[in-house]
Image (cartoon, rainbow, N blue to C red; front, side, top):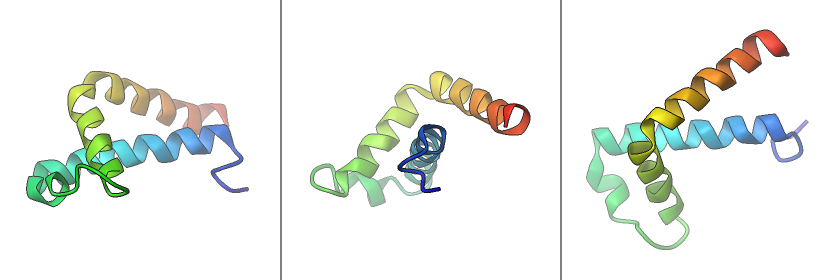
Length: 72
């Protein structure tokens, strides 16, 4: 089943996107800072969410990992 039709998979994909964008921005900030608008601006916005809400994102990662490992 596609991640679009499964809500838990969609949340996992979004969470991984946020974490990946924040990590890429920490390594190469100019790569994401060029594209603040448009379609590629989504990655810049995900990086900002990952940086500013990092405790909440970390808790979500732990909850999602627990859910995938032990609930399913």
